[in-house]
Amino acid sequence: MHSYAASEPDEILAELVHDLRQPLGNIDTSAFYLDLLLGHPEGPVQDQLRLIEQQVARATRLLADAAAQLRSQRAQRGGAESLVLTNSATAGVT
Image: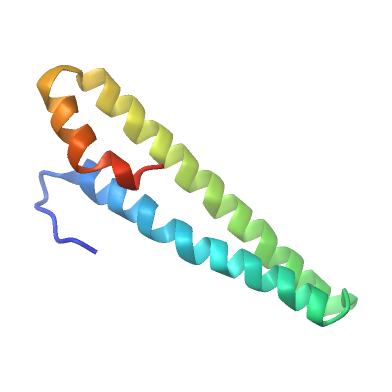
C-alpha cells in the first residue's frame, strides 16, 4: 500500500478498494471449497459458511459502491484534474 498525503483522500479510497478486492475473493473461494470438502455440512458449520458468504457479498457491494462514488466524483471534477487522476489512480478502481 502506498503512503498518501491527507489531501489525497480519493487516492486512499482507490487504493483501499483495489487492495481489499483480492482478499475478499480469496475468502469467498475458501468458503466455497470448505463447503465442498465438508460435503455440504449441516447445522452450525453450514451457518458459519453462509455467514461468511453473506459478509463477503456485503463487503463486495460496499467496495463497488465506493468505487462508483469515486468515479462519479472524478467525472464531476472534469478538465485537467480528472485526466491526471484517471492516469494515476483509476486503474486500481475497477
